[in-house]
Length: 208
Image (cartoon, rainbow, N blue to C red; front, side, top):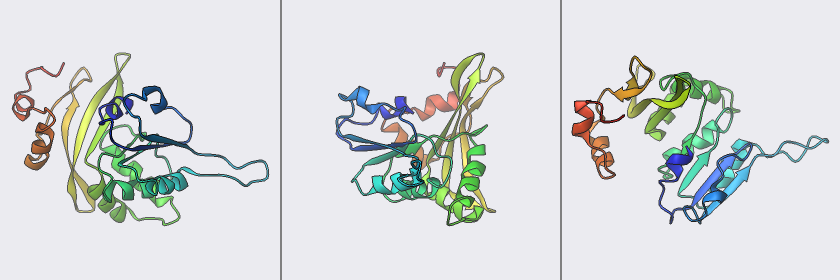
């Protein structure tokens, strides 16, 4: 995620939200001069003074961010994060633990059901379809951490499930290889930043 963050233009305002500081934007002041780092706080011995990730995400949205970055979503912060992603904070991102790129949808639904709002999966899936563009899955391959899957969220729900295309998927060795092409609209957006749809379709090993 830090690699992706380092591609963000230096003139953008970033807010990071973490339960323990790991992203470390302060070490890249030349790349991100306008950033704020928020860290969750546990309650003291008297049971007061806590500040949860969910509360921090809501606070971050009042700090005029261009992108909100949550170090790890694993609970009630999922709802304000999805709302932030769908309400104009394009390019926001978070990390989440799942065993596959497709498994992220079930994980998000589970966390949303645990929030005070207790969202049902159908509602969560609508939020995800409108908030998330891409899911990048990392896995261990032959002792190395690699990108094993990239999945595009198409932006719709069918039969209660989020519609998605796996753009890159694991091959026999576990490495990600081109799979389904992105939608034409999304490909046009990516090509502005150097994506070559023709090369992706050819799948001749250039990605290695």
